[in-house]
Amino acid sequence: MAAVLAAIAQSAALLLLLVRLRQATALQFLAVAVFAVAVPPGAWSTWPLTVPGLLTLIAHVGLAAARYSQRAALVTWWSSVLLIPALVLLDPRGRSVEDGLLIMILYPAVSAVVLGAVLMTRHWRDIRRELADARRDVEVQQSQRAVAEERTRIARELHDVVAHGMSVIHMQATSASYRIKNLDPEAEAEFVRIAADARSAMREMRQLLSVLRAEDAGVDLAPVPDLNQLPDLVESAKRAGVPVEVRVADTVRTAVLRENVALATYRIIQEALSNVIRHAPGARTVICLDIEGGDLVLSVVNDAATRSAEPLELPGLTGHGLPGMRERVRLVGGSLEAGVRDDGGFGVTARMPIGDPQ
Image (cartoon, rainbow, N blue to C red):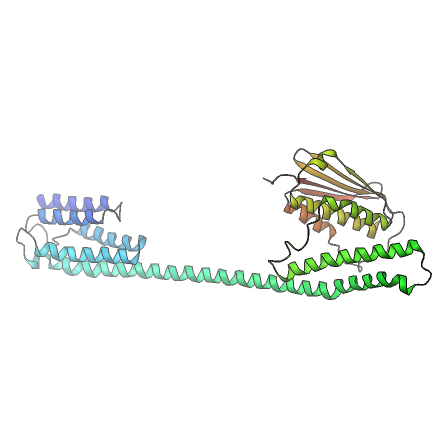
């Protein structure tokens, strides 16, 4: 009866202490020792462990290997392996070594197999995780390299095609007064304005090329356009033959706009006016800026064209103006609506939050 109670107590103590694995290791071993010594001689053939105690101690070693470092697992295993011979040799009840020989052989062998299997499984999992991380790193690097190559290609094309074309326009406008005889003052002033616009476009082009060539460049290369440059933008549209009216509410003049909102507003107006010049030359255009709630509301509305427009794009090509507007508005947390009006004109309405979007 005492042997049965000791076996139950030993197994129960190991099972309960197994819940707090790392903190209970010493207590588990102490429980094994206490109950092993308390068992009377000849109680069972698996002394100093009961069969449940043996299985629980092996599970303890396996869980230690699964949850903690390899060093902690090895220390736990060696401690348990040395504990059993110590109990057999130092037994105060005078049992012989033969009584504990089965456990002294069986426990180290089985627990070593379990320990090795768990550590090997953890090792393979670590290798697989490292391989997955390395694969992700390679994919990220390849993606970044592809983006860098594409940026370089775009920069090269812009430099070779667009920048060259703008340089030619600038040179022709600058030399017009020398090449064309008897040029009237009004035409000469117009060529001066064309040259100035070409220089401005080339400055922005160089800034864009620098940003495309180097990701860490371009932030401080030039001031970011905002609503302070709106009069110059409107004046250039008027010189192109588009009558433009600007209506800015007082709340907008006193409001403090985020830099990205001010830039998006300027670029949307710029693109809208460019579309009017390309597709509806001479059409009256009204630009309205107001604040409703916490949003900046921009509308650019033009009437129908007063004369036919010559297409600047090749047939079948889709423009990028409206998608670019929508992308700018989306990046600042706003929305954009655009479409043909009933009178044949076109309207663009953007709503952008003044503060940080939620």
